[in-house]
Length: 311
Ligand SMILES: NC(=[NH2+])NCCC[C@H](N)C(=O)O
Ligand SMILES: [Mn+2]
Image (cartoon, rainbow, N blue to C red; front, side, top):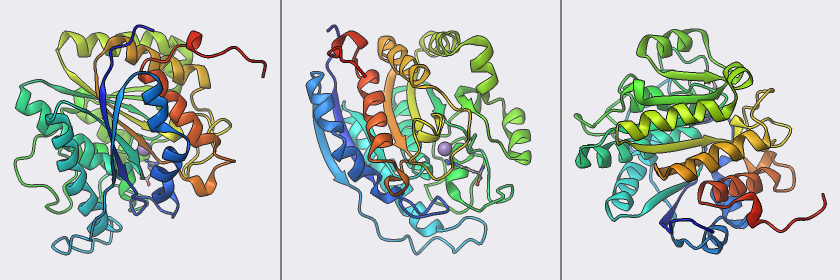
């Protein structure tokens, strides 16, 4: 195996209040039970586990009728922003175990602060069925997990969650791959802001390999850092049922692994979110395991590393 060994720190974010239902708070536990730490250790990496973040609701934030549970999501955003920043600044790779996708408001903002301090641009690879570019004004649901991209791009500020002057991500540095469910006003917003969208049709027509080569080329040429945010619903629900917002027609097992293998080869990835796993909806741990397997591919596992076995 020819993989650069990395120092990885796991950060559990048992957050479910950004989604419309319960269950995603069990995500970090399920990912640990599926063996995320040992899998990385077996690949030769040094792994530390910071445990799960524990928060109290941020009472300085308002109760917002169009951004449900803002005080809890806001508290997680603050806690994750600083712990992801601290882990990255200590030279380690932050691996965030979610938790619903609103946690990316914190993780990506923490990486944006880290990248700004290094004078390097931050790029985000958003692997998801959804664009998550709503704001309280445009969201049909009021669920904050549909808003994180707009938040870290500086477009959705629904209360002062993070200090004024926080660094934003340039929407043109966001690559969304696997998209197949976008709300009407959200669609206008992503086009207006120049987010790079590769929807499922683009994957079907161009192939995921060509799309990934293009993205990695752009990041490498800019000497950027690349944060990867993997929403379980990027995958087809047939292979990954343990998620609250399933959309048919998602990425296949091999498409998802090829994304991770190419990311691994590139050496460009600085940080990773694993989000939206809802173990309450899963089928005998299948979705938790697939997220761990994909993480293994991102950290250097190759098809030929696995013992051959009949199905
Ligand atoms: N991360 C997710 N699963 N997001 C789903 C968002 C669904 C819908 N667009 C909304 O804003 O409510
Ligand atoms: Mn999402």
